[in-house]
Amino acid sequence: MSLWVVMIASGAITFLTRLSFIAVEGRVALPRWFHAMLPFVPVATLTALIAPEVLRPGGTWELSPLSPRLAAGVVAVLVAARTRNVLLTIVLGFAAFLALAALR
Amino acid sequence: MASRPDDLAPPAPERSPAAELAAGALRLSPLLVGVVPFGVIYGVLALAGGLSPAAAMAMSSVVFAGSAQFLLARLAGLGAAAPVMVATVALVNLRHALYSASVAPALAHLPRRWRAILAYLLTDEAYAAAVGRMQEPGRNRHWFLLGAGLALWSGWQASTAAGILIGRGLPRSLPLDFALPLTFIAIVVPMVRSRAALAAAAVAAAVALLASGWPYQLGLLTAALSGIATGWICSRRGARP
Image 1: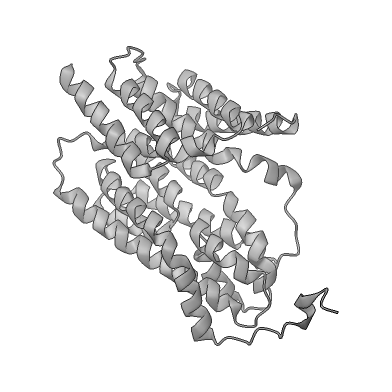
Image 2: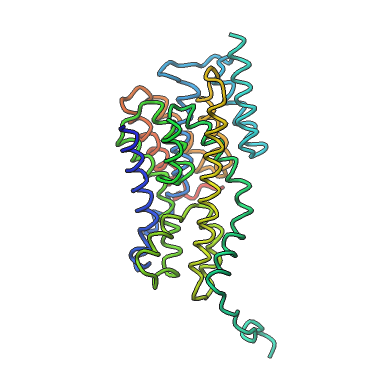
């Protein structure tokens, strides 16, 4: 139930962001600081989500090099940096995760 | 005399709405090669994250924003508070204000309903495909944006549906929810191309790790804002890319 509320609120806020300057017919300019901080939004937000999932899942630190999540994260970072291929990154990262999870 | 040949070129003939619509859809179509796999991955992982097939499908038209949908699917699985989820979506979609400002002059003459429809369709891909046409003259150029937007919308809905069908066939025992953070890694790593971006990522990661026990995933929002501020300060100090 509450997920539907979140979904509709998120949809409304996304729509209003896209409508913003179109609605006022471009008569207002964006401030410079807005342009300057925008490139860092996805990098910071997604990294903030990734880091605990890899190193502190469920609130418990997992720093052993044999931790499936840590190993999968390292593999995914290396594959993404080298190939920039989303699907390959997911597949190889997930394969590393499954392999180490099976070893445990 | 031939020093400014641009002045001598005849003006481009005015294209009909149908021609603009088709040209917009055609310009967008190569981008579907990248979008369709993403839609399929979204469909599979939204189910793995605990969304019902109906919710996963509805999100693709209600929210209609790739990275925000992935985030919502994951945050729902982690039990984040509703205001935190909405605030996170607002943050990652702020960039659309930039697109809105960019196309606004070309759409200023349109009736309100037209502008609302085009705003709804203003995704990263539709903007990328149509921005060039929006900066040229032409009475029917808003049809170009409509064509690009509808092509992307259709591709996104179809690939989401395909992903949901695939996801329903996968065994429940597969811990696929961990594939979501891996997807985020695949998105983020190519973005880290400057020292300022690296600093933003490092600070966001450090704060997120320390604050991961905070209730309602408030640590996520704190970490994101800390990272954004760090990147912004570093870029103002002129850190070399």
